Image (tube, rainbow, N blue to C red; front, side, top):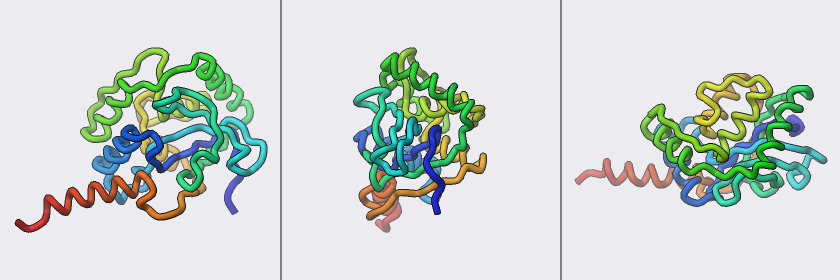
Length: 208
């Protein structure tokens, strides 16, 4: 039986809901980590904010998206395309995480395309360059920054984290995961990126 979803849990999303942003993340992670890597599939990430009942329609999350910046939403928007990492944030730590999220929500921070471009370069080339502007956020930067309030130490600075990097770091910390990704692989960002990369490699390696 899966663990109950709690405040502070991380939501990993496999989907193309942000168009070219999601597609670029999927492609960059696939090229850098390979299709066999279990973390490369994730193209978006959010944090569980409130839980009224154990169903996706009653669980609110906080996320940063390209079109709408930092905002609240319900987990049900990612039906069949998400996993939940159970971070076991303690109640006294959650107070600090919640305070941070509320401050960011009040500030109405925008999605940072400049930092996103740097993250894509990192995913593809391994460069350490990552630029971020004040008053902006990325999905992974928001989640990583929030969870530093719960004592999580990341392998890179919070603003420089990617969804795959967060998933990998949490796995190393022993956080359990509940997978909710179902349906044909081609409907997910991971499936489509895999088809694209596989097709490109087939064309390159095809006998002349």
